[in-house]
Image (cartoon, rainbow, N blue to C red; front, side, top):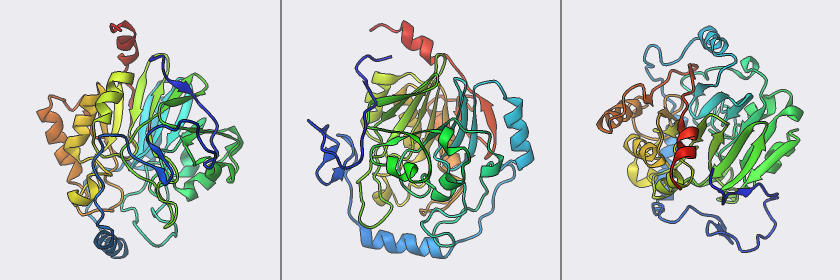
Length: 352
């Protein structure tokens, strides 16, 4: 483990920070150095996205893309007592690691919108509904966009007083006002403990907003989850940039990286927010990930690429990079797999 990481510190979203890091600005947070430049084409893009959201389409879903709930529960039960990952669809995961049950970016409702019935609607169900989830020990949310921070799901989770919540800077109040008592807000490169797990927030290339007046007022992040045996990387939403090679040098290697492959077109507008499938594979290589899993596809349509194009491009890019299907995962919604391991030991024996 690198020795220069800082432990968690309190943040209320408004306090001044002594000697703030470069991604803190008077206007809010910004992406790390070397990130793609943001192109302002807001009016045309907003009009296009609004048309997409109003005129929702029905999409043909390939057989086997979504497991029946019974099969999803059977898979979860079969992995009981072992470290495992379950894809709940889009960017939502249920992970068992280090004796903890971890829920990540749980968008499990029908609409990625502030108003149910309006906005991007799921065309596939989540892997498990809220009422079928096992008791949650740890909840991680990467940023405040509606397809990651789902207020309906957050409100519906039971036993809030027993759930540890870890979020980027500025998001703690959202959870405290909804009954969560143990909430840590992390800056990039800061960490927090949850039982035997260590969670580190790391840079991502994205943005934040839930209204028209709070742009970039809360931070966005990826997460590293580490137990004594395994080290995982969750990318949240991110474009591609030089920061991932640095993250790999500082924190890698990883047993598994969960990376978004969808929501990438039109490229001129989306390159600063979401990696395309080829860039996702490159991020995995930059991180030193032994296995990579594709996420952020096959649930809702927010951009113009065909909804089942991302996995085809991901598989082709992985093949070109020499990653076999055993190393580059395309999981079914609701599927559970046992987690690989070995990266922690590799880090420990690597020369300093």
